[in-house]
Length: 278
Image (cartoon, rainbow, N blue to C red):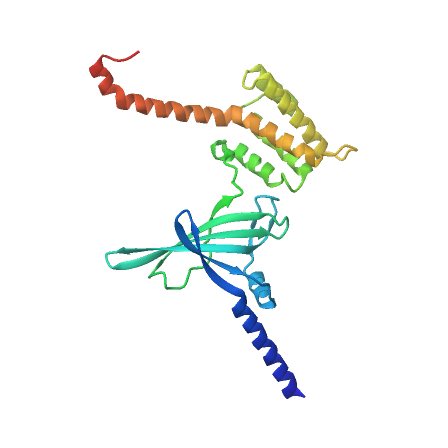
């Protein structure tokens, strides 16, 4: 009885191994004139499912904002070998399409790992911080004052998870703005009015700010009203409009001014020789 059961188990393992060998193929795919290898599976088997489940990646989803597990849906790679002074190294560039287990939306990343030896060696595992190619990360926070940037990024993190939390975080972002601008007043409403009176923000942006304040109040209290998913895009647009006016646009203007100043300095000798231009 035990011998028969053992033979059945071995037969099942043999069939499973043969399916695993037949189902996986490696193709050469050409992309922009360059070839890289794409490993794809034609048939989903029990063996493949176990392999995928064991390679899950935990990170924050750029679509739904959840910290969740991702599975590798597709993977392409290209090795580039460099021979410097007889020491051969290989840079492995790997592109991965990851699927979020919460919202099922795709994420594309690029992972570059450099190892000693040629391309015939083992491909290195996923690195600690691959480059995110899609969805595109928000860059507005890079030029914001630190406290404002933290509040703004937290607003984005809950944007697709909780409309109520998004409204509250937008209100905290306004509080951080008022604190940074040394706005006077005992309430957020008074401090926003002070920003208008001091001509720090125009009337249109002040109206946006007060609407955000009202939505913040709805989100922060238990009332019959609620923050709806359709309110979230307006909240984000209003917050970003205010931050763009106060911090992002001035930073862009300064960058352009610096660029023009350097160009002017580089051309100064020729201008002096030509007597200057109008």
